[in-house]
Image (cartoon, one colour):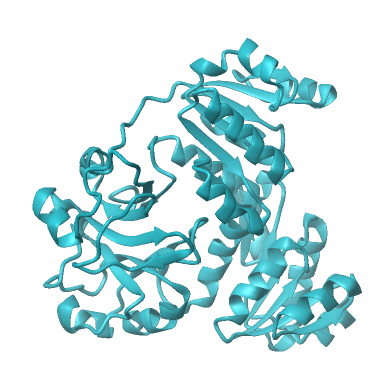
Length: 447
């Protein structure tokens, strides 16, 4: 595909890096020459220095010939304007990043579609929704739901008390109800493995499982984990992510939000209905103790600083909080944070990229998520009529080595994938894949 990305910030740069690996033709447009030169020195892409709201710069970037125009500047106004201009100039499909949830309301989004913006993305809202979803399953590092929760993807760290340690997958399947779940990945150190029957579980492995909801308690048992009820939640940071998270969860949990800016606290107190606003720092040990940190079930740090978020969560863990969630935007910190046993990590760049990347896959894609702890993806595809995947059982399908099918949803029923499973046209199929296997997987599902 010919893809034009407007905005060489963190989201735009990450998208350019990711999409260039899939052999798309990428053109990066930004008004900052230094940013453009830095990205060009690292990636095999083309670039144009200029304003994304300039028709001349858009023409120089080739938007009249592009299949997909993506506007991901930090400010929403140039994104909206440039997406409209790009569509008028001939772009086949346009996506704009916004910072205002009002744009996502049906009437407003329909109006924007009518004037040329095909899709809107609000990364901070998506991050808040992911955080809220993670609170439903304590004890796991990452949770995603597919087909309205009929299948779930979760990742769990194996500690010393995990009964499955040193078992092969075959041995594990014989002891536990493996017909209701499938282990689709093992993260060991820096390496992610798509496991086979003779692979063994080891200490500190991060295992990823596609499961029916009814099997999740048994999965936690085999991993030596205990789920605990979450009632009291502390959020550090009155950022967009923090405020949106609080608004999503305050009806279900007792929520406190800690924010150092006093004026910001006054604004938040008017905006949030039942969340208790506290003026202070999430790194203030005395404040945390005064606010009952030991009775906190989940601690969420979403300030604008990855370092503060990591340190705050480590402090909360040290004080006995069982569930911690940190927003880590610096990609270099993710493996370090994960190795410390920090808990769940949230990255808005990966979340935004997940939603945008689906527009490049040319299949009937329902959901796609990039995994924070691994360069891998888990996604849900609807099998096309006559597609190669429907012609034989999975054991004969020559599925790529670095990918696996976790499960299938057919007529509303979840089926865990086995060798003799046959995918039928119209099935929703949940797949785990490493980057080098994506193209091969997509070919199997195309009509």
